[in-house]
Image 1: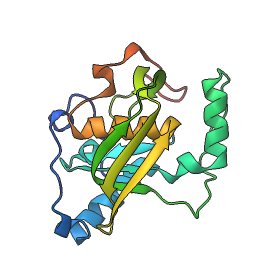
Image 2: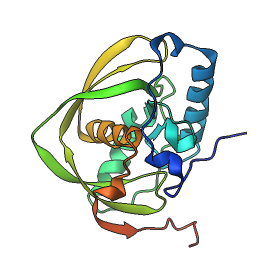
Image 3: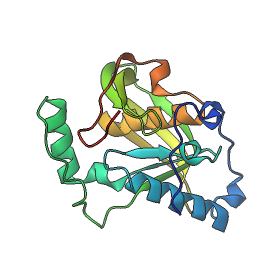
Length: 190
């Protein structure tokens, strides 16, 4: 059975996530949680990342969907951001890509340059707003095998790093967003 994505009133979203001891990172328990996270994220066409607390685990883990690196996604996203409504064709993702895993992530560097960006969240359905985020971010974390790595990012990935590490501190984007509005998809009734 797939784990449900918890919504904004759930107390777990307001807790600080617990770090995972390094020796437990590659354990069957953590691998099971990663599979559940991946499955929950894949069930949401518009989802690009998910933190463990969003499916009920107060653990310091987030994943980023491989689809953000697909050409279809990049094209559709830029069309949407320029105001045109494109039909999402995200399902046609290059299967060689896989979700990125970040365990015990810490942002080690944020650019001083910031910008207002459109943002939403799978745990704050169907609300969207503008958040003030650094244009670039560097993160240090462990992968699913317990190997430590550092990754720099700009644009959407830098925004995701900031959004997901906020989740791990019990912060939701609506805590600091402006111009928050509800935008129901055409197939969902209020």
